[in-house]
Image (cartoon, rainbow, N blue to C red; front, top):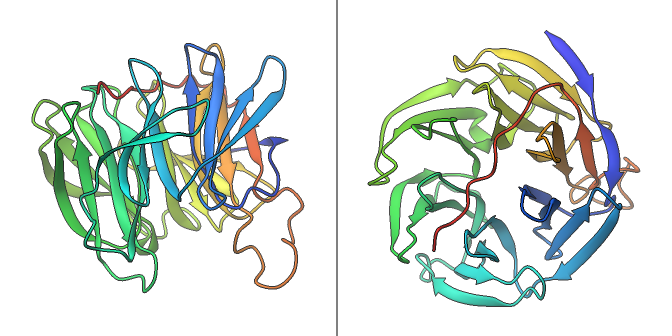
Length: 292
């Protein structure tokens, strides 16, 4: 099994970096600090960075085909202005569950946006995975989730990957893109196959799944059968998500967290919360955009 390493880029001290997305039109990388909360932007060609404060906790977002973004916030689904941070409400499927919040999300090739919830207080299995259609329809797909994470799709869009982080398990589903129906739920990666806990994911052009491993200081790459193929090491333990970017989609960007690194005092890892980059010699896939 091959092992590589990632280099620090910027952003150390970010509380909970998540959801890196490469904008192939603007050639910039976006990611979020869920807890600040804020939207962050990097222009790799110049090294320039930008931080846009947000009004409420954000779990994830996806770019829109017509510009801007759609986001899963504490108060439900919203349109998001990438320049100002202003939001426009779409709908909140869990307005009656004040202890829940949205977490990981991703757009699929059909133009829908998927995002799941979690209970932020007692850690029970109160989370649900939702699909937001371009026409604004919100549909629950399944519940009983502890921490919704690891949403990713196979290159043909027919397989959806999903992780419930505390269980240590990554699942795979057959996906009907037109209807949004899920079937044939199965274990893709069982607990203990890789170190740590599964967090955010990305799929490369070969159909392999890259998964950030929370508390393990690495990103793991699994083949289409769920076998661990390689890891990318980082100098921080709380690795949260990954995405391919760059002009040729050959750079693996990796987000991390500083929140929770140490209960009292500063984080013990100087680069915790930073954005990292690796060059594994493998090409990623363009990010799907929300069609609404």
